[in-house]
Length: 434
Image (cartoon, rainbow, N blue to C red; front, side, top):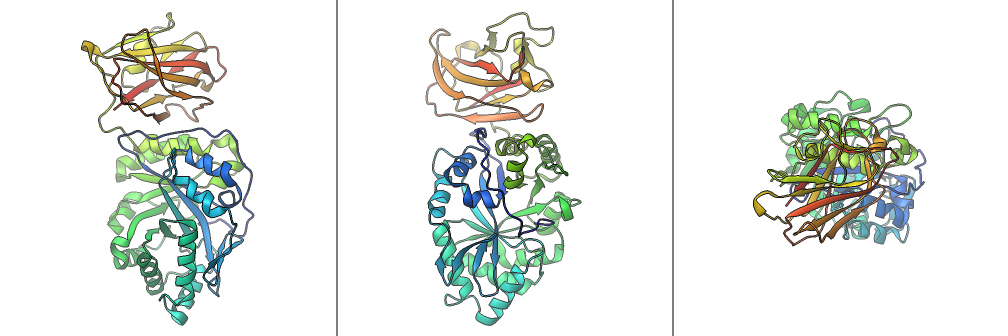
């Protein structure tokens, strides 16, 4: 990645309490989280955090290729002479990422970065040994694939723009059953040539839109490469970067201007080192809520709304939580309470996901702990989903949660048992989805 020193020690701090997020059952954007040291040293706790984050792809950044073909994950040797030599528990830890319940469905490794010689070493190895099954490149990447169970290899080539060796390398990886992703920040013509020659082996393009690539236009790159790119932003640090709210805003704008369907965040290590800037779940939610809309829309149309408390200010009554607009809100003068929706005309529906949107001000008023309940008589309730410790990193932020359900209910109730410390409780919008 541009401007990131690959030899820097990666933080192995584990940030506890990251929040679960699940994408809507209808349309799930592709959201990618890059990470370094914690993905290797963090163990099961880090894997569980990633599984609950809402990110759909985990990117292991970064694999360096030494001149003799050895593969090194940042500063940790992982493959030598066709044999996996990394941490013994790492393969099983990574395998757990895609084991339910989880939001993760894809695992990638990134090769290269800024200021290194990885692709020069790849070029030299291709020239001296080729890419056949007897070559050290083939043996080592085959061993890495077998050990880690990765689905794709991402080319973060910022040190040598040699088309022929990159294509040869890509064809070798494709022959192993791996997909190829590209991660450019400059040099249209190089990436055009690589993508054209690798054809359908390339199934994603991750566009850097920060540091050296800060001025990149996703629409222009999509047009040049003939594939809708997935732009990436850096997370908030003490010296710059983007808050979850800024990520949400920029991704929303690119969805409108370039039709993007996914994006990535650089990177998990920095998120851990700056917990005040937002959690991994907050950044996933920022992408997913900006790019994902349930295909069928909310079921909450034409029904009746009830709530546990009366006396809401004018214009902030209970009906505002189901009016389809995040610019309005429901507010009550207590820190807990319930709000329920009854479908009109005696109808009942099977809901399997729901959304909650934060209102315009005062995060302390946001819901923190709640249960979603269903009923067919308005008296007896079945708990369908329970969430605790929830926070909203920005205003007007929508988080969507999935749950297992096969029963049609005529009532759904959100029972909030605690907010984030305020004297009032507020919610901008609640959605229910099939």
